[in-house]
Amino acid sequence: WKEYELNKDIPSEAFSTLCAIAEVCEHQRQSFWTIQDIYQKAKQQVSKNTNEHERAKQERVVFVRLKKLMLKHKMQILVDELLEEAKERGKNIKYLTIIFK
Image (tube, rainbow, N blue to C red; front, side, top):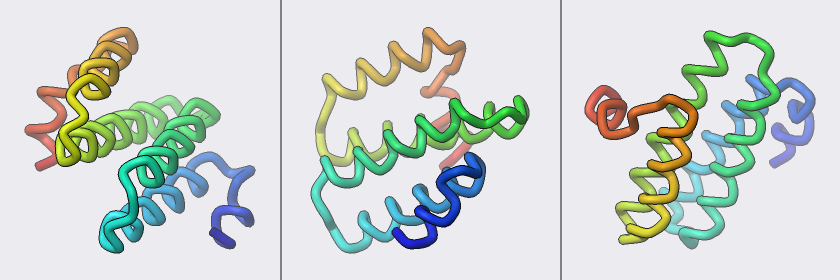
């Protein structure tokens, strides 16, 4: 978390750090809600990124990781909400999941 505090004002760095923290938490088998909250923070950092190409890539990554996490924990209602949010933003997560496997 110290690295995140140092980089929280640099959206692309904060995003990468948060994703790395979420991965560590997954390996440590921390709770779904803890990991989901970290990915939500990463998603907030994406919206702050001014580089459109980087923002689009990061957005795809965070949506796919959230979907995988939700499916792993059988949170189908949350998956449906995430898919709807992605659809509103013009993202096709079903297609993206195939790409990121």
